[in-house]
Length: 351
Image (cartoon, rainbow, N blue to C red; front, side, top):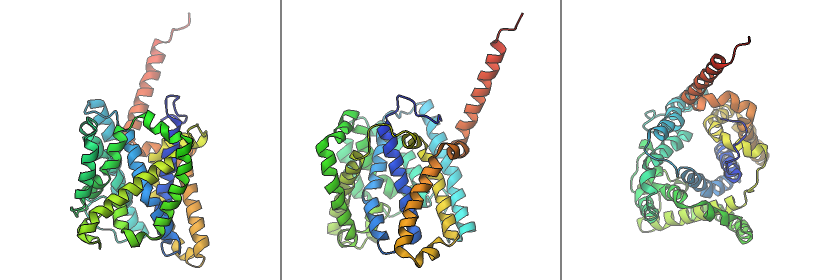
């Protein structure tokens, strides 16, 4: 992948992707200081809308997917192979190095951060159907509401069903629709919207449950009366949708130089940040911050932002990117070598 985005890329999308993947790192890093006052509020505020935003962008960028050889091959290279490699890598790192008691069958029950790879792969596989007609958008909402009945960790199926509306919405919205996010009134309204969601996050336990925000738990394990749980999930979806569009409207449309370029390295950030966070845990960061709770929370959040920027920086991504798509990297090297050989063979010899 080129270090500089091609001119055909939309800089806004790269800016949004970098903001969202940075929030992924922040959200996971907060787990190191979860006993700190204020950490649960920051965590709930982020998770109320940033996963829906990430899923929406994934859907928006999946519009061109079809069941042809080239795209299916790309799906295997960029999602299936990384999942098969990083799922056991992170699992055994957490268990053997960090000392966490993680259990469960590999690959069949995704562990921690790896769930998104397999769920995105499944969404992509059904994309050619879902993008055929707008009717699949209201259908996906019904699927999401009913999907909470299933209580299983197999392939993170609850998240596949629960977050489906955001992915389908991304498939059906067009650039002209997203251009409305640049309207002044939308940007002005976005600020109080996010403030309101911040207030709601202060009282998460009063109106919902974290499991509903994560979309990974069946209704049977959620302590909400059955007659209200569907309405609560629908409310969580609406809050997520409003928050996602409010946050995205505030992301600059123009190229931000190095930051925009980093938006092309989100897979590197996503796959490798977990190892760094778990290393910090193994080194005793939660114990260090226990004595300075608020300072620890601030330093952890700032450090998480710095980690995302470091992993996406050109020098680091050049080293790590081959691991995110090893087969594609090998093919690119082979093709480059073949072109050099062909060029050398066809070069005119001097008289």
